[in-house]
Image (cartoon, rainbow, N blue to C red; front, side, top):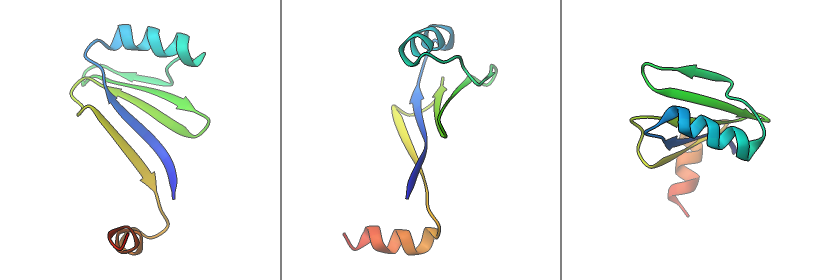
Length: 75
């Protein structure tokens, strides 16, 4: 299992872009506004800042979704 994306809510994309650019030392890889999306590429893990997102979402990459769900449900 590998982390591929973290999504975070950001009401003010310009302010969030400035904050994360300074914090992470990188510029946004892509901005789509509208609909209100801002992406940073952090060595293969994306940070997605989204105006209408829930507070936070983690996206994981797995080889087989069904078997991974079965394993996780058994824990």
